[in-house]
Length: 352
Ligand code: NAP
Ligand code: ZN
Image (tube, rainbow, N blue to C red; front, side, top):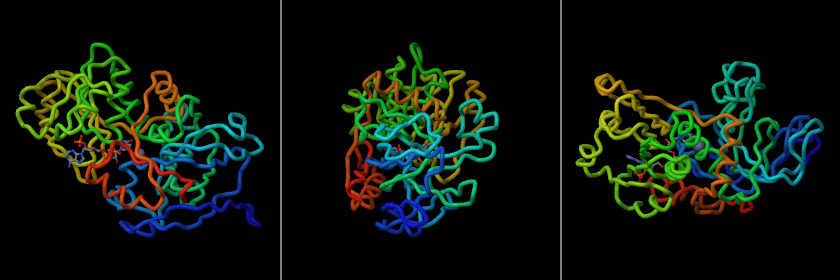
């Protein structure tokens, strides 16, 4: 595994340029530093953000690119100063792998808002200027402070999507107080959406799913939804006008924002986690008329990610996944784009 310079060779799935097919190749991970953990990756989820990035829809893509920020694996080695983890531990890594550690946000456990700039797990340059490569990979080297523990009751395959889809939905639901007495709508029932339903239900909120068609109704109710509506029917927007305290928008494309704002009660909030490349448009009157808010949320900090994993284990929540081999990722991307996934593809990294 190690060459003369002690870097760590690892098989990866790499996109040579935007929208190109994935290639199986080898890269070098850095030599283990005192605070580093070497992780033998077992499973890596496919988030729609991987597709936005690998297709360079958001711009600024760094190629070749090794996506993947829903990483679950086993600790294979630890640096000399590592205190929290030991060889054999079941661990996860999410959307970022470093931050300054000193700014107010790092200090308060919200590293994702680090003022120096959080270092994303892939498609980013680290503080030394080296590109980061993500979880479609056999091994990854990560500072221990950016590694979380996967509870024993969660299998590694179903745990992997929690590292992004889980925290990205848990964090805003908590921040905006989803709980008893609150009416929460989840828009879009994909990877994020189907986990959001489970979390919002477990937090005690009344959960409504707004999906485009009736196709996913049965499964939504099984995940804990109280109500389900197909937004393809315009009458739904009249029926549900003024109903929700909180709407969590997980859709990867632009929506008619005014139509969704009209579904909020006074003082309600529309929180966007879906991240379409094109700008949204809305009328300020949609906000003014009900003192409504529009907001966004970015993943969640490390401490909250651990809390989310523990919450999922405690409540017996888990993503519904389709496990695929490394040679099926191009096809999986096509299927995600057609919303033809129930509800998260997870790569079995042993097939690399
Ligand atoms: P996904 O599995 O593809 O789910 C997206 C869902 O949106 C689909 O299942 C579909 O739900 C709905 N949808 C798709 N195209 C649509 C369209 N044209 N009009 C209306 N609805 C549409 O994607 P995901 O992995 O959950 O990610 C969702 C979005 O969140 C992506 O943009 C991703 O980049 C973003 N994201 C953001 C963060 C963050 O920190 N903010 C973190 C992770 C991901 P229905 O079939 O039920 O309608
Ligand atoms: Zn993601």
